Amino acid sequence: MKNIIIFGAPGSGKGTYSEAIVEKYGMGHISTGDVLRSEIKNGTEVGRMAKDIIDKGQLIPDELMIRILAKTYDSLPEGQGVIFDGFPRTIAQAEALKQMLQERGHDMGVMVELIVDEQTLMERLLRRAQIEGRADDNAETIAKRFAVYHSQTEPLAAWFEKEGIRHTFTWEGSKDQMLANIFAFLDTLK
Ligand code: AP5
Ligand code: MG
Image (cartoon, rainbow, N blue to C red):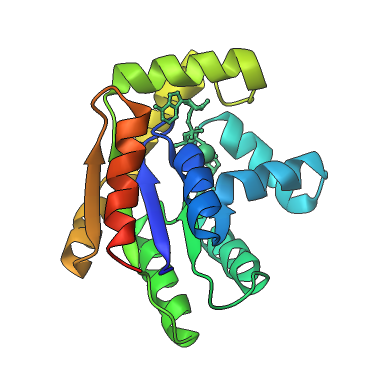
């Protein structure tokens, strides 16, 4: 499978649909949020630095994030395709990803954008808070994450549009339907 950049607001289902895609197509998966949470759990220097930032709903500095991403990408087996979940989140990260892949003779593949209304997002994240207890899943931090998404990440959609690889999928109330639409598109790529 080609590389896939899964893109969307907090709670839009990046992690959920990535898992389903990995199961069906057997590719690699990099969730930068999961990488950072694992650094925090292991008490590393990066983790200590990331914790404060994540708890405030802000973004980790581009330079550090790009380094972490490249290192994680290089640790995966080559040739199976990778889903990038939660990266890129800024124009600088997008430019860096494009360059990093070019240097390795790979390309960005396709961008899959998940569009979900904000009330549904908030409900999902508050529900997840009760189940998983993620530190950044409280109403105040979620609102900050939405604001950061709108100001720093959403403008990237136009960047992907210009690259000619943006494909949007809009939530209409059914997870099965959303997944079927995504699979139908990905099946055309094989
Ligand atoms: P990250 O972990 O990427 O969080 P996020 O973008 O806020 O997104 P979430 O993981 O909360 O949601 P999701 O879209 O994966 O949805 P999910 O499938 O879980 O990043 C966390 C933080 O790390 C950032 O705020 C930042 O500080 C830092 N960071 C990470 N990457 C960075 C980067 N590149 N640069 C700088 N900083 C970075 O679904 C949500 C919930 O909804 C789940 O519980 C799911 O089960 C449920 N759900 C219910 N119905 C559905 C449905 N129909 N479809 C999908 N999910 C559903
Ligand atoms: Mg996620």
